[in-house]
Image 1 (spheres, rainbow, N blue to C red):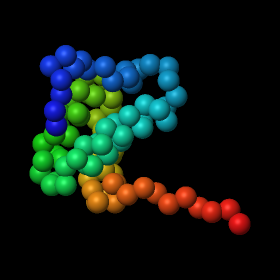
Image 2: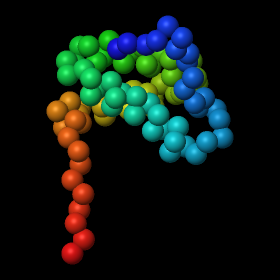
Image 3: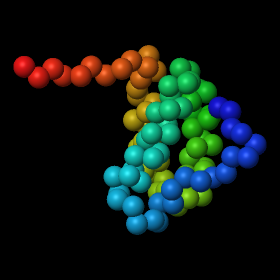
Length: 90
């Protein structure tokens, strides 16, 4: 996954006073984004380690990162590219 040379580790710190659902969504969102662009499990795992390390430096707990990565790994990349259907109101 490409990163600009000027890229910094600017993920939200887990110790901030943001709501917990926001802090839990950040790792999951990053792993899902990575899953969309990597359809091979081995590439996903290799690059997910980099994201995991960056998030660990921002005080994210290991168990939260592991859980988010496992959820993303179970998803099929082709399904992540489809738009979800909106339910019609009758």
